[in-house]
Amino acid sequence: MIPNTPIYSTMLTQLASLVTTVSPEREQIPVCAPFTGQQIGPVPICQAEDVREALKRARMAQQAWAATPFAERRTIFLRYHDLLLRHQNDLLDLLQIEAGKARHHTVEEVLDTAINARYYADLAESALSPHRRAGVLPFLSQVWEYHHPVGVVGLISPWNYPLTMALSDALPALMAGNAVILKPSEETPFTALMGLQLLREAGLPTDLFQIVTGYGPDLGSHLIGAVDFIGFTGSTAVGRLVAQQAGQQLIKCSLELGGKNPMLVLDDADLGRAVTGTVHNCFSNAGQLCVSIERVYVQRGIYEPFVTRLVEQTQALRLSKMIGYQKDSMGSLASADQLSKVSQHVDDALAKGATLLTGGRARPDIGPYFYEPTILTDVTPDMLVYQEETFGPVVVIYPFDHVEDAIEWANDSEYGLNATIWSRDTHRARSIARRIQCGTVNINDSYPATWGAVDSPMGGMKQSGLSRRHGREGLLKYTESQTVARQRLLPLTPLPGLKLSHYAMLMTILVYLMKYLARLR
Image (cartoon, rainbow, N blue to C red; front, top):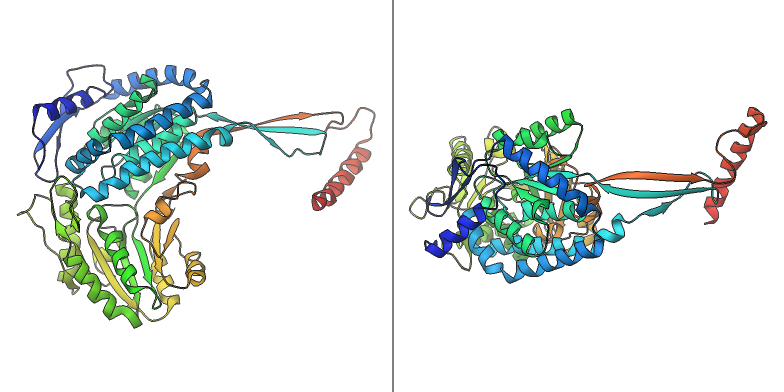
């Protein structure tokens, strides 16, 4: 059950005190636990002047931080890695309470944040140090590539993964020499604040990473108008507004947006692994996961046994609000808005002729926002659940005969975030994966295979976003590239006294020569 002790209340009060605000008299946002709907603690409703104060502090701190050697930054981040793992149980408790997750789904967040801290601590120096590049003329041209921090990075993070979406995006920005101002979701601010507390305990300068709390429509434009880079994770509709405002400011942006993610189960798949993977991929965090699967296409030869076993395993899931590990459990939806959207999609589909195989009901007897894991078939294009992102524990199953049809249907979406393919023939699966219009494609595993590959870029195609997190791209996007060149001996402009026609002939010969020299390397 949810702790309701003086010690716990004191901890939340201390976390709320980390919010950057110029006035202690701000109105408060009540933060409630999805499991019960009860308030667990308040945070300030920050105003435009709080963003300006955070920006002023951040700019001063960033100047010193940009001059800090990589070795010192690395030490802080590796210490943070250890602190995350050491305080794992406290973080898991808070994630369960604040986000309504089953505990085994919260573990992914803590491990992901620790992995990102270690990865960027090790990568930053090699990726960001000056590099020699080829010049116009070999031996005569010297060129260096530099990467400078953009300055102050603004991040707007969502409620569904309040630790990893806040901290794992902030870490590469900080490691690249920037300051960060984070606006977490008003529904889950305490998890981000605990992440900040541990980062400062690891040795990060106080003003280098700050958090302002409040409502997105009120703070978002002020933040975008103040920073040098904006990162946003959330809905495609809001992402368009963020991109529009970033364009008006001529600042770079990174957007991870919605998805209607497909899964293809081929007739040579390992049926047991495919069914278990589907349950994990569809119902982790009650389906409130940007890379969660909402559409499953199953080849006709294994369709019936696949559906039978999927329904059995789905019905074995238990809705639970227990704090602690519980096998085969699923947590709550995060809010009344999420419950309303999920109910609307399912009710609309059933009213228009879809078949319900299991689930399909809200469960207020367990908690205010619980909804049963749901499987639908016979879904048609006139139903909301066919194309719109549900973002809940609802999956639709479709049979197919030919792989070409499944690929076409998988790509028939405005989104292109994540996909999964199940097949024993890895070569065939990889060939199909390259034809799926998604930023990440998993083979014989659910989303952790690509999400956990932090050395590779992760992001969406089409309406699922811009830019990438993870990998070198996830670090370099927080920098400005600069090229510095030195020309020796022979200038690239005409020599005094040399006819322009002779200069043109000389340069043409050199360009031809470079072609052949390049082939010899």
